[in-house]
Length: 72
Image (cartoon, rainbow, N blue to C red; front, top):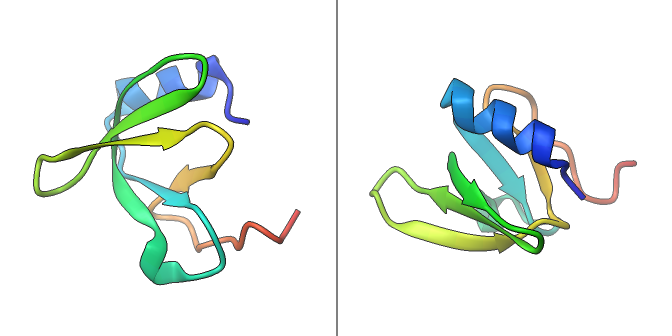
């Protein structure tokens, strides 16, 4: 699970993140971190819609190569 410090750094930087939910790249969510609580993260997508996602997903910078959730 991603920590509060990591989420705060992503929110303050305003960098685009990729949320890897499963093995299919088409199911990834991209956007910027807006807010979070103990269980969920709020991501604003490019079309300005917001999505609530579980904190247990893999969060990584969009500029980095995609890592599969099975790669540990």
